[in-house]
Image (cartoon, rainbow, N blue to C red; front, top):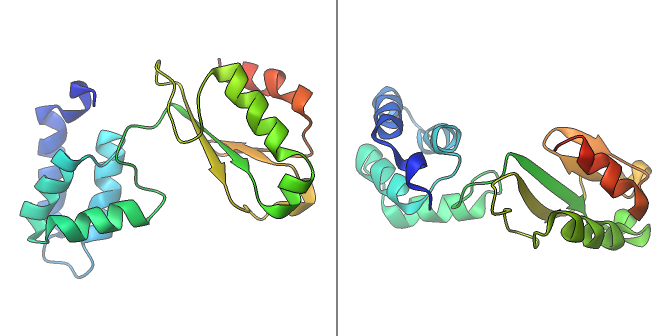
Length: 158
């Protein structure tokens, strides 16, 4: 865990947000969302701070963080690449596309590149079956792909 994300200023921002939310019903999810924004992830040190601030058990917070895909225990890359492995995409070759991306950026599924630039995720159906096979890079969607499209797409994010 990079120590720069756990800077004192970030904890102060989180404390301020917790104070604004702590008496509201259902405060945990908004606080976790804010923590994810501030820190780029919700590591155990941040979960402990939230536990103390909201008076919610650490076990409950950990359960929520690990249940919902939008929360991460470790920092994600600047660009999150999601390769759909839903049925339509898989049948149309998304595994080959995933393998090519792994080779091009030298990152395994579920991991972030050492330079912090890319996080690679295998996703389930994203609802763009008509464009199969599909990948997403942050908010950008690329469809009807073949393996050879990968290098050109990745060049846009260098």
